[in-house]
Figure 1 (cartoon, rainbow, N blue to C red):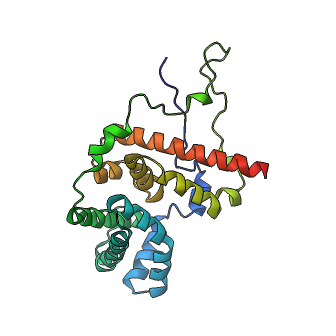
Figure 2 (cartoon, one colour):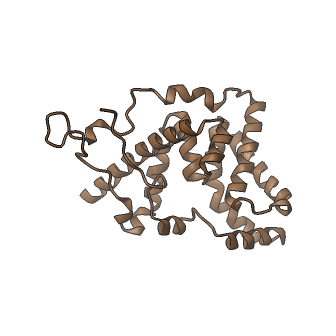
Figure 3 (tube, rainbow, N blue to C red):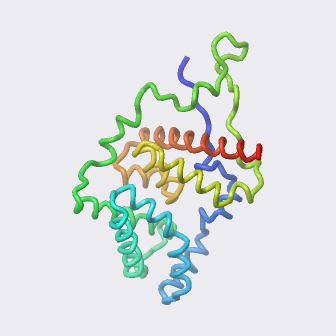
Length: 240
């Protein structure tokens, strides 16, 4: 029998669409249009709010490509300059957030080449796709000899059943970020770009030079590990 597979919702937190909107993960086309027009009009308050909203995530994503934090901070600054210089050319073919992070990753990859990091993420995939690594901890399934062998012994927690204030708390996101930071390099890159930067699978494959199959497996394994960390966090919270 093949290795068991678990399911991890549509994001690293497995949020419902309602929660993801409230968490700021998505913006409508109308929201983007207003935002872009404000930037074109030179609205400083909108720009400052935008910087505050995305600064931490941008620094985190930049750090995937450049090792030095100071260089990552420079990448973020260069990205904002690129946004201001290019805002008149934004055509809305993607969301503003995707456009923003595309500028960031392109800037970061350029700096990585200049800083001497020549090893592409695709060259690291083999070490992160070890054949004997289970997608889900085997201990989550009943062993041979049990009546329901290979069925869930402890199924994944449904996060959308949790109170919204608990799911969206700063502590929860800190736990998720810490878990992402512990992932193998390519898993960390894929999960960060998909669930932090909001890239599509096609975007991630292009940015990291990965095949769709490898991207899907890396994302699945990375999300499972992050979800397990969150399950521990919520279980401990219930005991307090």
